[in-house]
Image 1 (cartoon, helix red, strand yellow):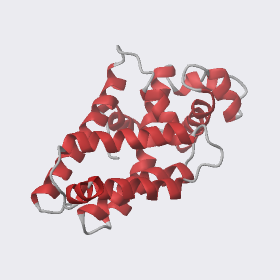
Image 2: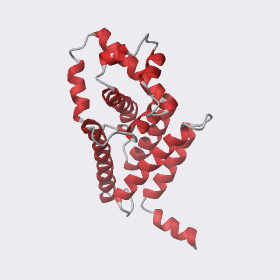
Image 3: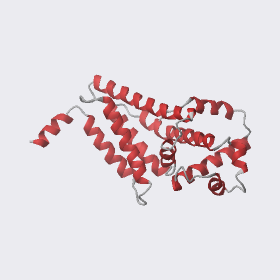
Image 4: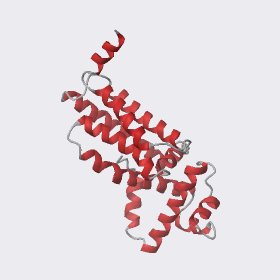
Length: 223
């Protein structure tokens, strides 16, 4: 995913000065927050619920490590991005073709739900409920927009190289992002959701839609 805000980078710098115990406690709290947000939603993810999930005796431990809910939510988003990068990027970069990278991006994004079932639903909840006056959270949204810009550029490059057909690359990038987000939202409500099968089906759909002969196939179907 590689969507990193300046707040995320600042946290990396601060992290170098924390003790191992402090870093472990913060990670424990962030992990509990991800679980709670995915289960009950952003608005009901109180410090009381998060403390209970983390096995803490009181909410004071959360307040000691985080300035408030916004501060904790920023770290939740940053952690999900870090996990997603670590899982997805090697799979994408291993592919030699644009179609292969597109497939790997979609499949690894959806399969991430199987490996980390709470992470993507949690970040969708957080980013969907951020306050308009929270500048650092707005930076995460801007980073997500930048990610769409990057995908648009990569799709355009594949078109120029003759690997993809003719279509609006930004519309395609937005369609892919929207389809993945829709699957994430749906998966949270379906107990027997199969991320591998869904990722493969979604990848098949967009690989067909982007290939050079997609328009010709559509014309044959209409005859």
